[in-house]
Image 1 (cartoon, protein in one colour):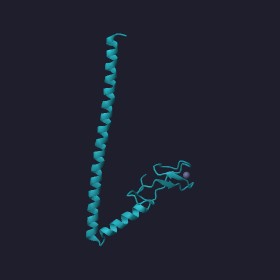
Image 2: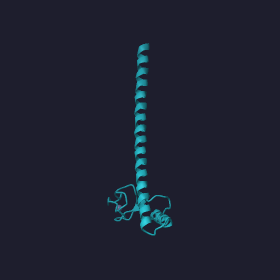
Image 3: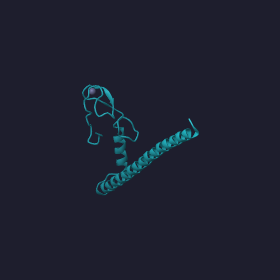
Image 4: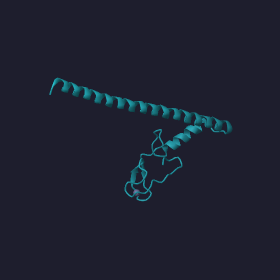
Length: 122
Ligand SMILES: [Zn+2]
């Protein structure tokens, strides 16, 4: 194996690593853009919720305290006052076993997860 062979192999390795780094950089850039888009959507939804709430306050006698109480009530529906509505587990309506909420159907019997509310994720 001559000097030029090993030099060419080194160049190929450097090129391959450069391609991998560029692909990783593109993935990171794409994730950054998706995160920015999600943040923009959350901002818009927050603004719409705020607009609806101020309209409700103008048209009714509901107060900020009423809103805080309702938020806490909803938060506690899953048993945890953690600022999240998502249940970590649900109980299968068919076999009664507990299944992680991220599954759309029971892992034991295959019964689709029954929505308890129109706001439950599908
Ligand atoms: Zn089941």
